[in-house]
Length: 221
Image (cartoon, rainbow, N blue to C red; front, top):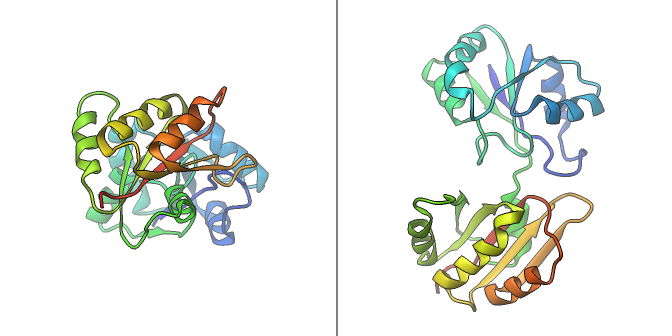
């Protein structure tokens, strides 16, 4: 079996007992970065060996891993949150299903859910975009998102967030309501809410911006 196991996005306590039990019992763990996952495993005294599985090697090793999953229980984790959501995971999950290997995903942390719920924006329906293309296709995606009639959600890096907000102002209008969440579940968690223009001003006032960022933007209308 392949277990898809969410890991904390901030506070190390944000992991269920079921996840910890699985990580302790499987044959090995596929980790996006074994150095990052090593801190979590060490904290909970889990000695299960971890192997690297990331965007740069997943195509090369996925077939071998599926063959191993046919006879062993293995777990897939990412650096933070639920594997497959803007993280490696889709390829091996799809391949396991195609080969008849059972896949069990354990409920757990995903950054965009608390960001959306805390945004104050409509959440009866929403569109998750994840990371925008950094170059080719970026404007096309922004035009598409700007016309959606539901809240849409982006992931962004700290050094690109000022540019992202300015682009959203260009395509969505300065008065579109939005929310920027960073450091979710960590000591310095912050939510910046208001119009895109107001958010841009607040970001400009900061000397530095740190942490993974989730942007939620009100739909058109």
